[in-house]
Length: 353
Image 1 (cartoon, rainbow, N blue to C red):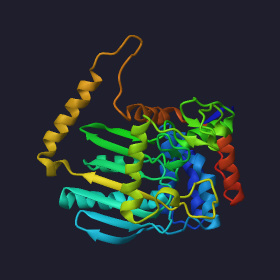
Image 2: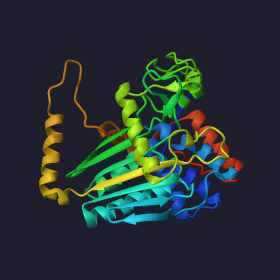
Image 3: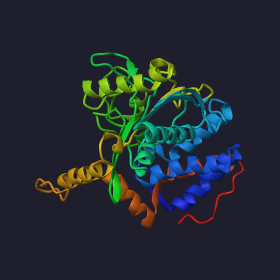
């Protein structure tokens, strides 16, 4: 296992951003993608951080990810819309889609936007948080290539299909639930394989469907759904909301991120914004959400537990700590990022922290 290196968010952003401008993206687009990836690392979600840059770059250079920076609106009907991302970077189409969902929630009380022909959009919490920052309840979801079997099945039929919810709270960070529907994200298994670490036996199976602690065997096998049939069922519903609803890729039509990087990923996304004012009173919603949160935080703890957390609170606290103390980046991830920059002729800044 390689030792982590501590860097500032500003330094890490200054490495990632010029990689994308060198590939022809505008400064705003490069800043958006870099900010998304660095923020995931800042919050301790390394599987959705700068680890992804080399794969993104390879796909851009091989043509499966386009340079399109604005998705096309292909359907618009009151509170709902569908966008075609034309295989552009998911952070760009994702931000556009959630902004549109918020605008529709402003006008209609809710806004729902589906995106087809999309690409990986990073961590789902980013988009749900955007809605919460505007005072709305937000939801973001994506589908992936099939990675998990149906209960009793012997081949993968649904992806681990991440989804995130965010609930605004007055005067502080929102409640944020961000989860893949497998027991663990595929990126965490890739990190374990890269570092030579074992994984818990509850995370995945080998190619024969047997639980394994070997990340290499897990990558050749199947992920296990969280909660068994419940996780499987939720993953199927997300596939409907994203791919089936948008007219985009679903099921086996969605390609693996690390498979043939010349073939478009062809995933799909779904975004929802709910305006509390449309349900009665925004002020009452804020009071009640805050009351619920405080009741949970004040609940008794079992012996040995210092406190209970709201969903997303641990990641928020990590982000606050990283702003003070720096971001811990695995040395192997940093080396791959530096090699990608060097291959593109991007000169790295000298200072790391």
